[in-house]
Amino acid sequence: MLRSFASVLAVSAVLIGGVACRADGLIPRPFSDASESGELPDGGVSVDSTSPAVTRLRPELLRAVRAAAVDALADDLDIRITSGWRSRSFQQTLFDDAVRTYGSEREAARYVAAPGVSKHVTGEAVDVGPTDAADWMSRNGSRYDLCQVFANELWHYELVPGGDCPDLLPDASSL
Image (cartoon, rainbow, N blue to C red; front, side, top):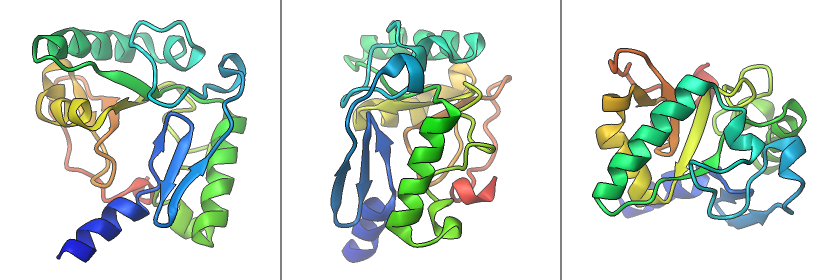
């Protein structure tokens, strides 16, 4: 059981603040000009950041995340945006890295969506952290019309008007 849980966590190719996590450790990515790519520093940024990764999110999504962040502060939690809008080229780089890591496009697609499919490219998805904030969001996000979409990505949220969150998809390859 412990090995299975550890495998799920380790294999989850988490994209958090410019670092991809994988089974054998971290794959550091150099921080580049966020104004062009949407890449963010380790630890993410405030929901009020002027980074394009934040300002290029769909306005209704950004309003919802900001409202949730204000209420999370009442529970002494600081919701950070660890990934938001991404350029097509940055998303392609992330996908290509996942293909090299996992050995095939099919396997990579479980963890990183291709640019033509990713809601990050259209500004319709946001990743939040740290883990306690993502957990808070999974329990409270529907009050702000924010829904976790993938079972293997506690940190990934999309706006679902009406707050009726759909059943979780197993992973990004389900898109």
